[in-house]
Image (cartoon, rainbow, N blue to C red):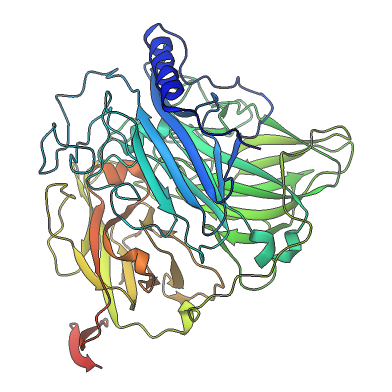
Length: 585
């Protein structure tokens, strides 16, 4: 059971001691060695309906020039799991103890309308040492002290900032996460490790197939290459062509091999190029477990698979992006997981005497994308005396929570919108030369997202449902994400999809330039929840793209009782869009 919160005096002493250690060269964000056993993040659990946590965000310069970032709680746990129940109150006291390690405060800073002396709720300062928190996937209002990332910004030297919000009673049980959302610097901070898991308990109530199972939380992060000058492993085939994009990352080879754009880690255990020495996961032979896997990467797509004797094993999908499947367990042999997405699945440990492998297979990110090759993440070692997982699901599940709203797929949308990804290339003949990134509403002018622009790109109304068609007019894969809500994938690249779960992040396939139409997805956006009222962003969750402008904002207005003017947009290949206006009483 978690200890009671520290008193204000002890909290001040703790923050002072952390600052002293940071200033005197001690490693503020220690990390495991290559090949280590994967350790579980510490669990911080709500007590009597309240989760009260002190978090300090710190950065630390490394000898190779990279910077680590981490969250540390009052007991020294790094990036702890936050465990809550629907209806709980979450209170987080966030202290910014970062140092300006790269002296970039005066260059590249993004400023909102308010000045640097403004309080955190209005400052809008986006700098290398600014911080805030985004609670990815939660249906929490986009307002200060809850889940606002457009104006809220906490600076070093500010007093501890209080986040206080309530987990909705109808929040789906599953895996969510927290991370900073400082526009222009999100990529750097997530590459440095600033992320952690948040679990809404009760998944066994909805999916009784997992009742009583031990559970594991695995956070996959990416980071700058530890061995950027190393040649590929001798076991790999020779890659005929090797390109570097404008940001210095390895471009997609199209082979499944070669230098990756970034190294990966699992619960901070690094698995570096070129040999990918795996981390170790110990399990009891043949034991079934629920694995909750979060892709907290800034740039890297995952294609998760478990191998035993090189044979892909059945994995029972339970939930995607924090939302349990409505039907039974969906057995698959691999899961595509874009940056920001989560999968929760049942896996069975290898039999005694046989070692399994957790791997990520290559992902085709397109001619303009980064290289995400085949690689190992961890060896799965069966041992009779393997440590018992810290957390187990309840043996006797409670009654499943009833959804008061009709299934999203059964609700008629009030309108259809069209958005598209596009890029500006420095060299039109070089697909890796993108310098500006756009996410545009059809009919508007493509432009990089501007923090100073007070006008939202889209205005919607709470209580309604909309269909969005999102095109990709670039030659690299993008991952669409929207804050505050989930959506239903209806159509992927022109083909109908029948999914019985919701997402908050989805891949949009890249354009090869050989088709008459651009690749696209159709998603059904759900604005029925009152917590969605407010202004919040949608963006590509490759944070390099988001930082360089591939983002927009939507304002959701409170539901109206008077007539609503509904505009339905139709599109076809041989005609211009017709706009049909109708009154809906």
